[in-house]
Image 1 (cartoon, helix red, strand yellow):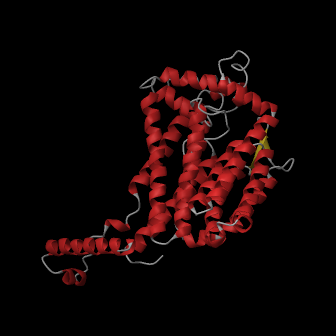
Image 2 (cartoon, rainbow, N blue to C red):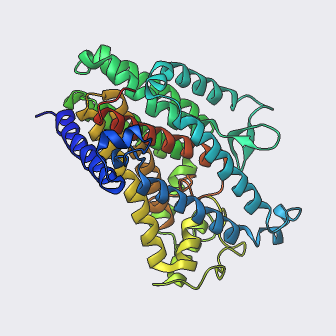
Image 3 (cartoon, rainbow, N blue to C red):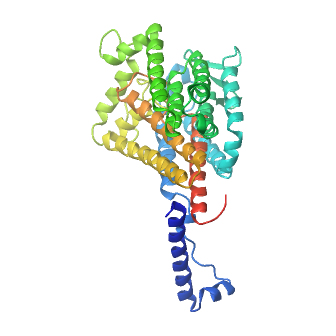
Length: 421
């Protein structure tokens, strides 16, 4: 029996049960209830994924609270002397509201539309990555040119590219399904596209975003059935490329050495400064934290406490238990992404299934890298914690990605009821 038949049978049974319960309440048959204008109870299969939505809302809410806590002392620094202590709180609330609005609008877009415009979205994102490198156009911060000023806020093209690559890789895999075992027709074009994106990102430089985008593309290709030998070659090429980049760049090489021994006097006040203070924050938090607002490291000791290292502030104020809860919430998002993707594939919706799993890879990879950096498991990278860290582009695109994932789930549920999308 197929998936659709099995779920169709279950839904039919649920529908009859709902009609019976309604009939019992009104004292008549299901037909009489319909005639009298009483609507039968609706099957839960049409509902959206409540658990996924509430986990996302919880992470966004935690982000607002922790961004305020992590940034409240920033005006004491000369760099932010003109800011009010609530400036980043207000901005983060605006970003979350904008993300929610754009997410609701994105949810209304059918997955078939994303499939249709996937190549164009990828090209637009590629152009944006070029624009950010143009002198006097792209905005540079701390030696990195990653933003395009838009007046009231800044746009980070690499965040748009994460969504674009997720959708384009799924679209490419479906279009080239018969060539996925071919090097020239299946593997090479996608490798060239990702290589071009990587080159532009490394010119910013933004190696962290490149790692996430490479993970998304490789993951979707693997799930889409790329030849095992070709995939192994791709992994070996990626590892070799990253190794070469680190070896050829003195400051990247120094960062690796600092990561290996952050307490060395040569690095503790230099390349390992953020890492050492992050580890101190986790150490102070112990099991249950020092209490919300009680962090010492956020008092201009830990750089980028409201963005890249917000997990360290969570660890200091909420302790091991708080960090564990955050990890479990991200685990739930990744798990549901793969479950929704598997369900879509069972319904013969290959593009939708790969997009859902691509979102799971995106959130999983970026969360793992950010947490690994905060905990000293990985070298320092400029990556934010999805849905939690301060940032307009990140919050906005994270909300769009979740909306697309929930749209896949919604269409799955409609199809399992025998409807059309």
